[in-house]
Each structure stands twice: as C-alpha cells, then as structure tokens.
Length: 431
Image (cartoon, rainbow, N blue to C red):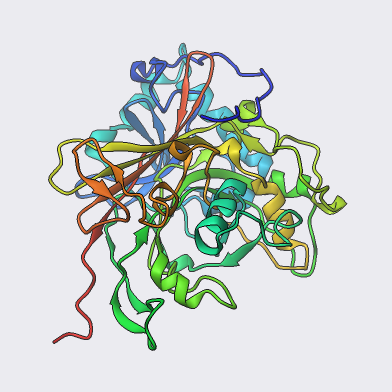
C-alpha cells in the first residue's frame, strides 16, 4: 500500500491477562490492555457507565455504588456519560485505570465481588459514551487534500496555507450520534454545472469520510493559548468517526465560508472511548514536513498512533459487507495535539467533551482512500463490491462501517464498529 507509514517505537507491552477469559484472546478488541469506556443499558434498565472487557461489560456505576471504586468524595459515574471523570484530570484518569486493572487482572483477590457486576455485551445496548460539548472537524490528511484538489480543480496542489496550519471548521455537536444510528439522506440545495438556478431535493452524491475523533478531557481557559504538549495531556481518548458528507450540497455552498449543510446532517462515532493511555505504546511520528511549522506547533512527543483502519460497505439485503478501503491513522499530516493547540492559540476556550475530527485519512494508493469521492474519483470510476454491484456514491439502504485496531504483542486494541445505514430522504415539503 504505497510507502510504509512512519514506524512506531518498539515499546509495546505484552498481553495483560485477566480472569475474564474471553479477553485473553490475542485477536479480541477488548483485552485488559484496552479497557475502553462506554455507556450501556439492558432490558428494563437505564443507561449507565461501563467498561468493556472481553465479551463482557463491567457496570462501573454499580461498582462505584458498592464501594469497589472510590476516586472522589462525590460520585463520578452516576450520570450516563463520562464527562464527569474527564473533568477530574489526568491524575484521576490514571488512578481509575490502575484500579480497574487491579480488579480485573488474573489473580485479583476481589474477583468474587466484581464478577456479579459483569454484563454480557451481547445483551446490552450501547449509547453515546459522552456528552459532546463542541465539534470541530479538520482537513488534515495530506493525501485526501491533494486528491480533492485533483478531483475538483484538476490539480493536486494544496491551498497556500495547508502546509502551515491544520485547517478546520466548527461543526454541529447536536448531529453527532453513536454507531448504529440510522442517517437520513439529507435534502438541500444543489446546482448542476450547466444550470442557471439551483434546485432543491435529496443529495445524489452522498459520501463518508474515514476519520479518528479526539476527545478533550480537560479544558483550557478563555483567552489563554496552550502548547502542543499541554494539548496532548488534555486528550482523554479517541473514537472512530464517520463524517458523512453530501458532496453536491457541499459543492454549491462551501465558497467562501466552507462546509455547512453538506456536513450538518450526521456524524457517527464508535461506541467505546479508547483512552490515550491504552494507545500510548502505539505512538508514531508525524511525517516529514514539506515546510517547517511555526514553533508554537512543535511538541516533544510522537503525535500519531499506529492504528489500522478499514471501511466496509454492505448494500441492503446483501449477506456480507465488502471491504472497500484499508489505511492507517499514521497517514495523517497533523496530530490531534497539534490541531487542539492551533484551535486554542487565539484564545478559544476548550471544554471537556469537545470532539475533534481528524479529517479524512487516506494513503497514497487507491485502496487506501478514505472517502467514496476518492475511491470512485467523483463517481467517474465506480468501484465493484464483492456482491457484484458497483458504487460511485452511497445508495439508500447501504450500511457503511468503520473499523480500527492497534496490534500489540499478542493483543489487539479495538474501538468497536462505527456503523450507520442510510435511509431515504425525508419527504419535505410534504405533499
């Protein structure tokens, strides 16, 4: 798949064993090394905080109520989102992870107390894992930016500012939904190249964008910039993120102020927050810079992570999904910490629960492109699915799935699928 992405430093820990036997499988996405955070419910119960371990979910809300977890004078897990813990800061994050590890590790003397608090994941429904305060989406994948330039302007040349700043736009927190939430095809204005006037109706060029989402855990003060290293320490964890995009609506509206309705109808995230701590050994450097960045964007740590990513598409009624793209998060040009630093450099206040979309992740080969716009070259070169069907853009009934895994020494750090099915556009105005 083209040139190899930057190689991470070899500092991966081996598999940590647990008395939850399913989590000791080298290919299971939720080993003791991971411990991702989510919100779940079971039949007849309210949503509550949980931690995935193998095929089970530890009811953290119940564990705190029973005194097995005590990190603060006030409850941290009595509300169905993880923002309260985020606001406690890195020291409490580390103490919580250490306590979870001691409770679940093989040989734990508290197994008999914890075991009744495990729920089979197959019996649980998953919900939004955190309350999204604000949502900002970046345009920080170099290959994607070059591809879009070639498609839309006939040249892969980047905008003059692109190699100097991570470009982004403010999105809609209200449109961020958890995996499994159906997405209606959006209505909006579009304009054909040969038309005198725009028309209104359902988008005909519906797309995805394969992204990672960084979650801000601790905020910054209004008016006060932050360094890249401070930004790195503020990041609580990561999710897979699908920035659904209506390319025809976007193409008509985006000049001069950028995306608006072409992006505001839905953004899907995976249901489990994989913590920055779980990904620490997978750090990898950003690529060599085409132009030296200004000093405020320099940090002391490798800013990206070696996370394998793939996109699957399944037409309605098809028995299987087809893998249509594979790439790696390390293909990004700017890291989440650099993006967060730049976001706050003018004094913008960042808050616990802010979500930063990485921008589309694409590699140099066609099979690594992270959007259908690139995979089909704006629909001009449709690609084939394993079912024999072809696609240029998404059709009603299609289900798109993002997957991500970091491969360690005998273990896998997974995120859980980020999935959404496209429903027909709402009939509006109603006849």
